[in-house]
Length: 155
Image (cartoon, rainbow, N blue to C red):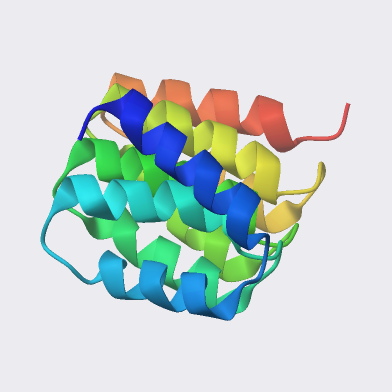
């Protein structure tokens, strides 16, 4: 599906249903289990706009999409984790920091952004997870770790 069309659909659904509508969330959760990456991307994008911030089920289902084969879906899922997860959520931090090692620089970049959203500054769990990747053999991962540290350390 065309990205502009997907965004229009998501925006319209958000306006019509509002946050936390259980019927819409159930439909989105069902779509996340499908094989069609485009439909799953749309569901992830809608989920962060429609789920209540901190909705544990939305965090869990979005985090599961981090393992998807489709790069754009993974990137959308990382972004959504940062928008749906409550600040400092250990599970979300662990799932997002794994993406700092991803081969796709776009997913690593999205992981840095999501980590900054889900992690309060000074969160030692996130700092340790990012610092552990400073010695990684891949340059892109090391760079992402530095960016992640810059996003989460106290200034």
